[in-house]
Length: 270
Image (cartoon, rainbow, N blue to C red; front, side, top):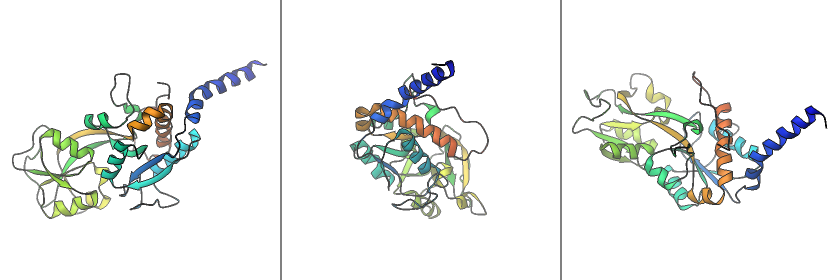
């Protein structure tokens, strides 16, 4: 066997050592859910279906990751709170996207680094959670990065990362059932400030004379991942690790970048 042929054989064997177990570990009847609300450009369309041919880069990246691993899954869309509950109950295998919080980390599976912390290299998105005010009602000195002015109320969508952050900060919270209700409730003065990541807002809410006004510095920077059910992680750990690695790579190929370099995806074996 020539040196080139031997080298190629060794490379193939190394690749199979990483990918092979994941291929053999494909879970049967795997269900992967996305939010039923639109978050373009990552997730387009509203409701249970996916608009084709462009459902959003997050859906395309998920399909690419599954294809790379040779695995099949049912892709569906659910309200965020139901998705969270079905992940905890094991009816869903994976949910996209979920911001990491310590509370969530105790209930769901997330990619972790060697120190047991959420692995920023495998985050699909990183965003800043901010407080927003209606343009005609911007409270003075409402948030200084540490304390919220006394008497102010904060609207958060129930069951989201923002909900947990607001509770830990000790904000006076007004619950919102879904993202589509957030802006009407803020405009109707049901609460003073809205805690949300800007990617969850429609573009029109951040432009023009009625654009929402960011109040103070970001409340928190949050990493977003494909969260796994504890049941799937226990039964098919090789697949879950391989999926996280493949999704990271596919997302970096397909996700629009607004300048700056993203962290390189780690190898599956790390």
